[in-house]
Amino acid sequence: MHLLVIEDEKKVAEALRKGLEAEQYRVTVAHTGEEGFFQLNADVFDLVILDLMLPGRDGIEVLTTLRRRGFEAPVLILSARDAVEDRVLGLDSGADDYLVKPFAFPELLARIRLLLRRGRNDQAATLMLADLEIEPMTRRVTRDGAPLDLTGREYELLEYLVRHHGRIVSREMLARDIWQVRERSTPLDNVIDVHIARLRRKVDGEREPKLIRTVRGIGFIIQEDLP
Image (cartoon, rainbow, N blue to C red):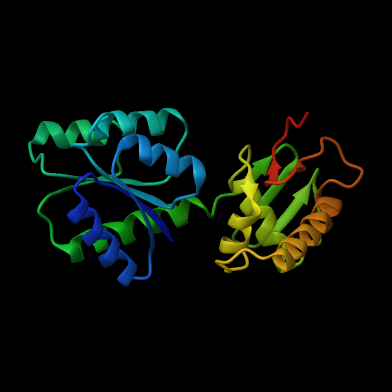
């Protein structure tokens, strides 16, 4: 699981990073709202931990902008503001939980686990794009009602692309999240390209609309309204 911590106090941010990494989470840290937006555009996160008192854009502005842009992952606010109205504002602005500083680290971990479990339950729902349907619980995939015979790796690639539909998925992302390889290498790029080509033949073939496209030099994208 990949977590984004947006916290301007560097000592607090570093303590969070070390503690969460010790629990086997992958952690990226941003110290401003703008840096947080940059990271969210550059990578995929399963949960965001957000401080309210940030330089420049404050946490509420960051949160409302994220939700307005369609960001659906859980957001946990960490803040020294403990007034009831502050908690209400945070939750009404789109936060999934609100934890007041100072806090006990085991409680933070428990709240993170709860939010991530909720996210996994949401991921069990059927995924749909055009006439493509994916049932994550059974790994059944159909296109226009006809079942597609995918290998395990092809299924993982397709589900990953669909969960990021409309966004470019880089080869680095696929290497890290599907193949579980941190260091990108040319041989792995070739393997990824071969799997994508096979997947495209099975998903698109002679069908319309074409859903999967290669973005030259970057990666791949799946969406209904391809040019």
